[in-house]
Amino acid sequence: MTADDRAWDLFAEALDAGSAVAARITNGAAMLAADSPDRDVLMRRHHGEGRVVVLVDEDGREHHVLPPKR
Image (cartoon, rainbow, N blue to C red; front, side, top):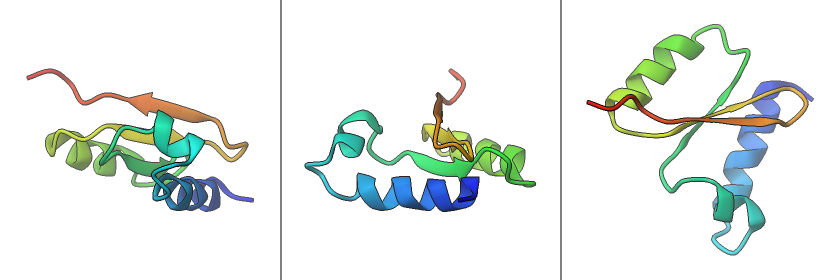
């Protein structure tokens, strides 16, 4: 399974408000594959919107990246 597949799976699980995933993912967070070629561009865009970014590795590990303080 790719990191992109894992990110989509995490997104789908987070939609279930009663799930364990939804309990640990910030509402409105953007989930991105950690190895995405345009990861930095997407992170800047999502952080510009004030959103947390969750980077998802191929092995399913999650890295929560908060937007920079303004």
